[in-house]
Length: 188
Image (cartoon, rainbow, N blue to C red; front, side, top):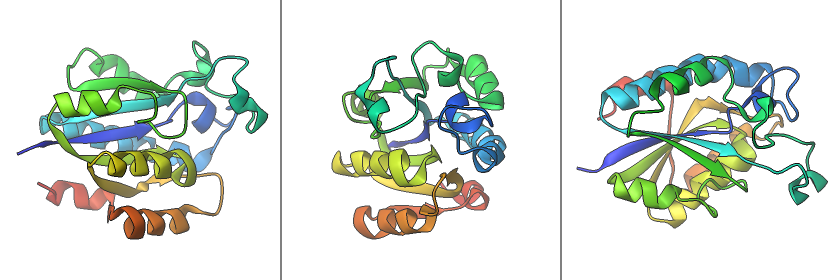
């Protein structure tokens, strides 16, 4: 039986903190405790947790579209709050991956696919920010590479009003299973 992976997308200081460079703010702060509990659950079950993090240079052309955020080596790129503490505690675990990503899709120009295949992962669960940008495109990246996809609805958020539209798109286009935190204990 293949393993599962939890992909924690862009839960950085810049995306979550009130004063972050491109913040979702309170809605992102609210999901942190559930993401930490889910990450622990995945590790307890022998599954994989991948922290997928925007990684930009100071002069990245990306900043022609967006305010500066997640510049490599800055506080803004660090995992936010309790997630940072969780990562520091677990980063030596072979089932915990850190994937810096240059684009929205965590699979694009990264080694995420190779790492997941090497770990015998067949299904990915996606959480974090932003539902309608990086989460949506990471779900597509997983789908396009043959992984089954699951979105944990109440562990995703965004700074737009597009949450439900993009969740519905994941479900209808990529056949993503939509679950809630309360469902996780019941999953095999």
